Image 1 (cartoon, rainbow, N blue to C red):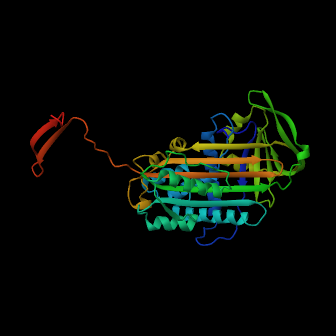
Image 2: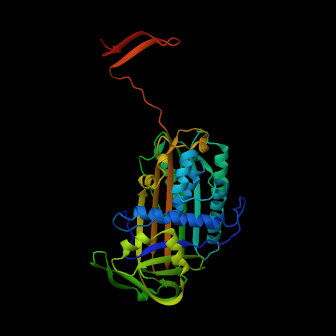
Image 3: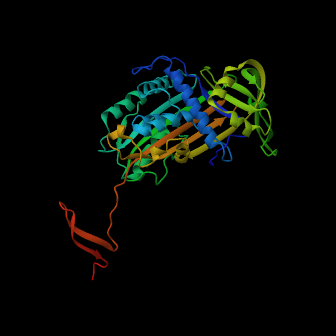
Amino acid sequence: MAKNRTLWLGIVVLVAVLAGSAGTTAPTSAPGDQQTLAESNNRFACSLYARLKDDKGNLFFSPYSISTALAMTYAGARGETAVQMAKTLEFTLEPDRLHPAVHSLIEALNAGGKKGDYELSVANALWGQKGHGFLPDFLDLTQRNYRAGLRDVDFSNAQGTRRTINAWVEKETRQRIKDLIKEGVITPNTALILTNAIYFKGSWSLPFNNKHTQRQPFTLLDNTKVDTLIMHRMGTFNYMKGDDLQVLELPYVGRRLSMIILLPNQVAGLPAMEKLLTGENLRQWLANLHEQNVSVALPKFSITSEFRLNDVLKSMGMADAFSGRANFSGMDGQRGLFISHVLHKAFVDVNEQGTEAAAATGVIMKSSAPPVFRADHPFIFLIRDIPSNTVLFIGRLMNPKE
């Protein structure tokens, strides 16, 4: 499916993961830290959306997947690189509390997905160059908090390794995310790839009857109309109407997860509403929801989006991570690693029965390539006495065959 990058007209869809207090295994997070992490993730979601919304077309991504993959990367960041990443990702918890909070949320999400009301799974993995020498503390932290065991690979075999990682992504997303890592991304100086995959499939708590689905007009921003399949149902839902928008919550079976729909009151009101989409406004809108009998009309739709997030994340404040100034010495004790790519791909399908969504994120770390000194053109050369720094001879080579 073609790449799409602006939310479908008139409706902003956010999949709200309402994480409860499921039991977790060690490490455990401090009371309130999971909520603090959720607020950070929501602020990051709104900030990233603001950067991605300007391109035309549909848009869908998983801020949770991106944040989780980058949180694993952040575990190895030090100095100014770590400061920039924390600010960009909206992390307010100190690392010793952040990573256990991430762990608790992953455990809660996966536990909820195993109860049978819906499918939800989160998986992480590290793919490291054999013999690179990653620090035990880094590997232990990512294993304990992210269940991301290190898998030894050989990045000099770029095609084979790419197929292996992409196959893992496909498996963890039920074949919905394919070819996350394209040809040419992996090179011999790739040292580490950090991956996250998330998959969700849930049925509406109050499903739509497909007998009531009708082909009806959908009005675009330029006021032209296109016919599409619109689903209909009446029911009691959490709902709010404000001066600029309406907010509707559609719960899935089990009522632990829901879809939140933000609908501008004006047909062409999406651009103005997008400017209001902040973490704080979202919190207030959700707090104002109340049960009400609502007549719902919602399009059936399917979106696939794909992103290379390097430039966006640089513009959000973490430029050092992508440059020679990067400090990921917490990974291997050296200063040679930097992020070469942050890749993300997401899929969603909404129909009468419910929603299926999947996303994957890959953070590709490379080693700074050693400088190449290839004397294959004319040059000057000197012979010097090192203790006195005296040049004893000097010359130039114009043609080695003369």
